[in-house]
Image (tube, rainbow, N blue to C red):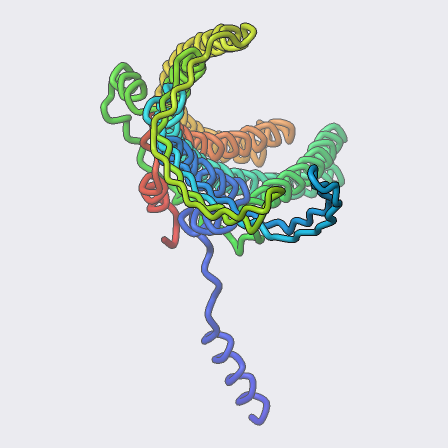
Length: 446
């Protein structure tokens, strides 16, 4: 009676301890937002690119500079009186101080106008690139999450198959000992068991690799992941017309938008370089003071100057440099235009492939679900036949292998279908955290 009470208290304490909650897809995404180095680098790059706007704007604003100087001067010399012939030696020391300030306001500089336009376009490009990085993080979080789940499923199936084969191996040995089975059944079961053991090791290694990839993404090992429910809905894409998805992708895909921004920047680069052929006009204003305590003639001066005017510079000949640069940037612009065409074509292909992956993936999942039911029934029938002596142990092993292969294929097909939905949204530039939330609702315990 004395030992029962402490054990009861311990049991109650253990039951009262909080159970660690499995992390779900949104948990992993939030951790990735806080710890993924690729995402952090993208944000730093975004902040850097935003400064291009300020840099371009600065070329239209006035430039102000100031200067100051101070010097101490000593003059020694002799002077001869031409009438008397007397020689006079003298030494004079004096200070010179001065300061000035100048303002230059560009009035017409074609190159600066183009650079200002480039800066504004670069800010828009930076916004699009950051959105791409955010969508990439959403997809990578989903990919890493489901890679781990798929590897975990594969390991579970490998272990279950190994256990089933082990049971069949023991049964074959007993039947062989009593004369109800041949040595072929034993050897076949042993071979299948050894292969299953090797597959278990391979599956465990793959799981560890996928877990390391997830750890790299979120900055620490995950404390268990929520699994998919046993049955998920397989809705068709909405709208159920691939051409509408292709049109949406052409209008909204962020990679296309970035390439369009790059082409616009290339256009302005042509204008900027061609500006080297144009004259420039600046408003120049200055204020200065010079205080000179002496001179070689012994005269001291102190004056202040104020100036304001226009300064025109006209380029005449620069050795052909500007013309060469214009030809270069025109060719670069054509390269950007061709790249934009390529990106658009690739996007059409990727969108169609993503749409097909969603639709055909759903059909594959449904087919494998039915195949799993059929494989389970086939195994049960084979076991009954084996017990009645009309089926062999090899047939049982084949039926077991077929069932576990179907289970593994079904598991991978479900994860592939979910990821294909994300890729379809990515192709149209609309992938967001909300899409992860929809998938997260399919996880058990969420």
